[in-house]
Image (cartoon, rainbow, N blue to C red; front, side, top):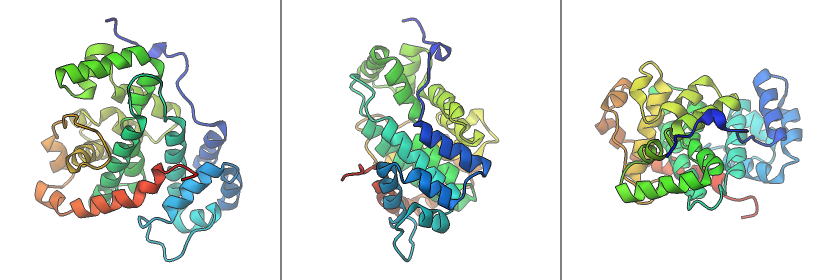
Length: 279
């Protein structure tokens, strides 16, 4: 088959204009807690999901959070920003068409990777917000490919199943590119932090970014998440872990083993992020 060219994409998906404006205002420092609350509260589903997560055991707050303004004060603007991005992306990408591709399985795996990533970030002194976002969205490119190339992506799934290979290997064989490149392209369009963009683009090849800790962290979190069975990736083979990535993070397998319970608990506490607004 002729390889696809990501430059040929007429228009990459966008988040809702209201969400994009909120993110721009937060990043520019042009909005306070009251203004953010006013902007977000018009979206009932987004508000409900953010408050569910804010009140989950993940944050361990001593009292219930009843409003977006309270969430901003108690959790901080950047934490709420991460919740807005995550909620908006999950809402935006749930049905990529008739490809046999299960979006919710992808998001459950992404949430598991985010949970593992946050635990690893705490232990390595890295930015927990970026670990959360990079982990949740590391496979975002799969949805991009499924939306824009539905027939070709269906062929990717068949190739993977027939050859028993990894997803990105099937993508390279059928499409001439992979979800890492597509996801990084979209993350850059949404003006995500550069470290998050690189983590999305490099999570299967951490050795290509030897100085970028978040790439290594998301790579390791992805593999550990699969090994723990967090989320739902079916019977797909587990990619090999880059031993150098583990070492450069200052970790070892014994230390990782001692964190498994915390990782599982963190995943459970974040699960409200994937609940629908009316559930």
